[in-house]
Amino acid sequence: MGKKTARANHSFMLGSFILIILLFLTVFLFLMWAFKAFQKQEEEQTRNDRYEILIDSSSLGVPLKIYVSDGIDDSLIFSGTPSAEMTLSVGRFAEESTLLAVDEESDQVSVIPLPKESARITLHRSGSEFTVE
Image (cartoon, rainbow, N blue to C red; front, side, top):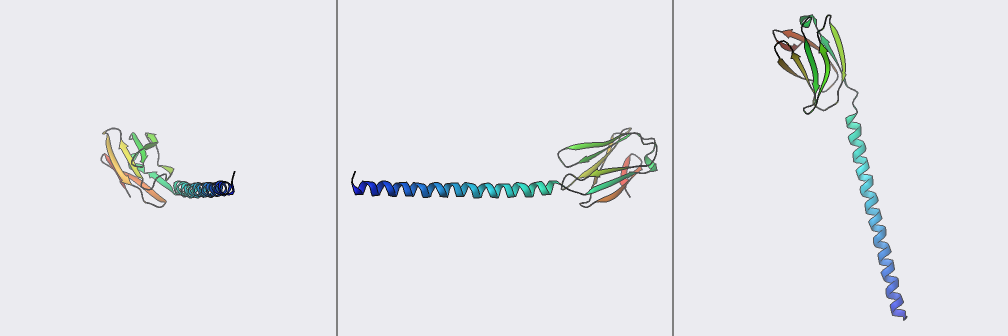
């Protein structure tokens, strides 16, 4: 093997080594960026906001269901006939949540948008609809 061939092989190996290092560096930087974005997304999903939902005396003796909805999924938080005023505590699990109050006698659904911060919400029944006081 001549000196020219050895020098060419040496240059090829050095170039390949540099490309491999750049490839690993690019993959490492991409993974770091992806994990940071994933961490931020997890932080946004964990919320400490809580809602206090008070069912007042206008709903006593009326069968009802109360759901919290994020637009995709509905979570049942109460089903039954309240015999006394009661308070339900619910954590916020979506950016925009709504409260669905269903009068089981008339199947009337009342949609109540929930505020972005923690709040105390009083449900008042007027007729077959629910309103917030």
